[in-house]
Amino acid sequence: MTTHSYIEANKDRFLQELLDLLRIPSVSANPAHAGDMKRMAEATAEKLREAGADRVEICPTAGHPIVYGEKMVDPSLPTVLVYGHYDVQPPDPLDLWHSPPFEPVIRKTDIHPDGAIFARGACDDKGQFYMHVKAFEAMMATGGVPCNIKFMIEGEEEVGSNNLGTFVKANRARLACDVILISDTSVIANDQPSIDCGLRGLSYVEVEVTGPNRDLHSGVYGGAVANPINILARMIASMHDDAGRITIPGFYDDVQVLSESERAELNKAPFDLEAYKKDLGIDDVRGEAGFTTIERTGIRPTLDCNGIWGGYTGEGSKTVLPSKAFAKISMRLVPNQSTEKITELFAAHFRNIAPASVKVEVRPHHGGEPVVTPTDSKAYIAASKAMQETYGKKPIPTRGGGSIPIVALFEQELNAKSVLMGFGLDSDALHSPNEHYGVFNYFQGIRTIPLFFHYFARA
Image (cartoon, rainbow, N blue to C red; front, side, top):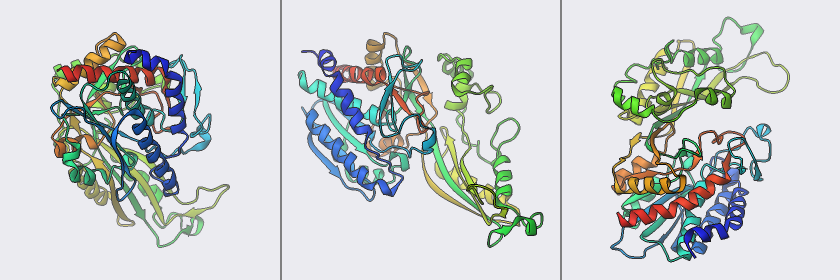
């Protein structure tokens, strides 16, 4: 039996196993789900054992555990380290889901005529890391893997991977590899594959603005005392000028500027602006002047307010002038920006623009450095050949707008580059209500991954 025929013969089981994993609410950000996180780690370890991995361990950290497994067939052969994460984003707001987030259902859509799996974590990243487990099983069942393979599946990616660095530094020998293979990104379309060769970095902060020492009656004090919500809103709005540029002094000093020819190459990727707007339900796009949508989301830095709150937000009315207002702000960074430097610049600027009528505090949360991966490496070429064989088209190298902070960590600590071979779509509602993952995409990944190992082992 060939690997492909084994996959076809076991499709129903492969799909049901993923649905079972999606039923586990492994929300790393919520302490109430600590038991679910443990259950998900145990399920992941069990699936690796069943697939044929040796030395499978659930490795404790100061937070949620990391699942490790390996199959070392010959130390003289190349070694691939597969990275993924079993934790998921919180499902809120629940009322916007068309079906419960942890009760997966399969529904056909215009983009996924073969059906899409609707559940939190379907694409990010349970569906994508589990492709590797099933591809590994298929290889083991039909002759074995052509090179060494290691798995490291963590449980804290959605909260900043705070304990991964400690684990990697303490286990450099165990994790030694020639390349890291990651499926936590997207393709351009189901009829046009792509491979991310760059990711933006991230600086994520929470800000607090304090006015009076208690909530006040808005009739008695309104107009005489600073309202922290009003001031915070103005401060955030002031961080972009009319051209969409970020106004923090020094913010663009280290930004890597691409040449006109590099920009032209980037914009060769298929992109339908009208379809993009229709999918999002918007009448127009917005961003930094002088750049295309592809450039704005791939090679330019950003600053966005991800949440803002304060005062009374319950049912009915309460005429209150709040004591405090809060916001969570993320900045996506590009080569050669530094997370630490940008965080410091933001904090200094935020304090500087605050009026004397309020006090401000900036609390950094987590971040990660931007990365660019090579397109001429043996591993990238192997991934390109594999995707060309299953899609019938050569994948286009693209720059991803998201952040995977651990890529820079791996390069620094393991001295190994990563290949970002994802199979999701940008329209799969990652981090949003009604997240989904195409059934086609799931199995396309399972079919493609063994080919990557085939070509990489022969390189």
